[in-house]
Length: 263
Image (cartoon, rainbow, N blue to C red; front, side):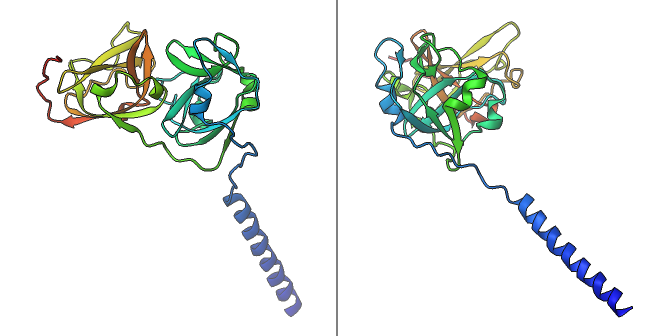
């Protein structure tokens, strides 16, 4: 009888030990670490573009943290990353990018074989001279993720010093003390594909907020107050625009100002 009890205790102890080991292995998932190393900054890569698309033939690798998200529908098959004050877009033939490349994730990009050029007025990497999307089956050949990285801090700028901000296109910025010119609207109205809503500061300087018809907050009313907006700086037809990841990027809860006419 004593032998049976001893055997039972031994088996129970072994089970507890094994169970504890298995649980520990499943609870701790090591983060993937890339072997890629950046050898060129995003700003140095941007400087390679001169008026026409450039095929990258050197073994250039850049890195940056993700600043865009397609989760709410305002970005589609494109990814923006930023290093310091420089950002760049990447055309990718995939959706649900936010699941693999969440905001703040560190991303490495092998640029050899890609083209650097303009998608309208925004600098991007893509395939062929038209800066088309990288094929889904080839994405992992060009883009890798790793540990590290935190959400980028937006650069605070004012609308009156935005006149020559091309170097900031594709980067995350913050503009303070601004408001919608006509808050009696929604972000996107029926029939609009890309809605344009004018935002101004109290001196009459203005910029356009561009929002896709596919955003999940399109029927939300524009906030009526004054405040801060964080967005990726863009450009279209020579005019600067803002693109937000979600409605939470607009924080207009202060008292509206009486705008002055811009001189």
